[in-house]
Picture 1 (cartoon, rainbow, N blue to C red):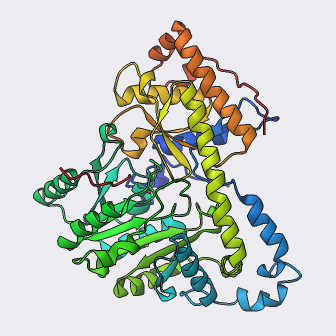
Picture 2: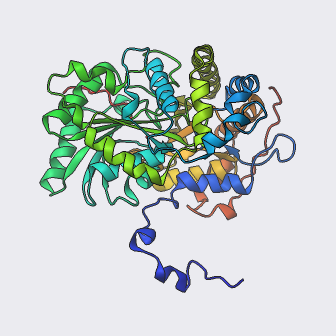
Length: 480
């Protein structure tokens, strides 16, 4: 069959949206994934391959979910025990979703928040993951050219999820290492004022809590301050709470829903959040996303749009059965934070022994690593040279801070929950070997310094893999 290449005449028939380049696929955030796909690590079949540390997945509690599935065969219509529901589930289902599915999700979201707040199942709009939920919300709230403020560093795929097809702008508010990347109220007000003065229509503020990539949670005072800020200006606040059950150390997670009643000027019509089971339960392949809004018009409109990205009824049935099992939920929410804490501690402590610092975190599936000491110059060009050494020579796919919009070069997000203990030990061994050689080998530093950005094919370094075989920013408002 004869085809047309992307750089041939075929591109001329594409729409402006298809060709606008806003997807961000050329970002180092995604480029590192490609390096992994081309040479994936395997402890025996490919021990010198690239270890995937750029993908935020929670694989530490799969055994708990697998055990539940084995013990509950009726939850699936694809088993002999559950086939009696086959016809009902595979027939057309309403866009609202199965009632038991939405009710189970509402109860689960409340449980994550210590049952300090309740959720109305009728306000849950299902979507195929947080990606679909986020874009749907943007379509509901903003027109092309409208803008949302977002503290940086922030989740790189926001550029795809929130901007690519909607035409919405993101205005970063730069946070810095001098105060642990906390957002100050003055910086927030300054960014808002500058946008208004330049003629940009600011529709709201995007907050990730817990933060991706920093792995920290926003406290009650922070959330109150943000609600006061957005409420007084009659703009929206959109909270990405996809990591809400990954908190493994104090303070506890506080949802934007919990503090609404404590802010007198808060108008619920401007408050929305998105959620998913992709991170908390480690089920990204299920594509279970949630848009939750206190605005009736948003719920109604979003439900119409949800027909373009529904959750399969088979998945809804399985999820409803699992989340309705109180014993399972309690066990999972007790065990998952413990395993995350232990893995996080392992990485941070081992890196600390070789002189690598990390931002103190208490949530998420990653940590924010400080590699500034390895930069010959404090520039983003130098960060990219270092990143290419890490990816193509040390063969670890970590994500550079510049892909998250970080204002300072030399920081990297490192995912720690998407691998087994063997792979984790190999990854730590590779980093340790690199640091040891860096301090003791002048030629290593010279080779790195001479490596031109983007010229990984000429990389003269050679770091063999040691075989150690054992098993969407914190927005703490600093008032000036």
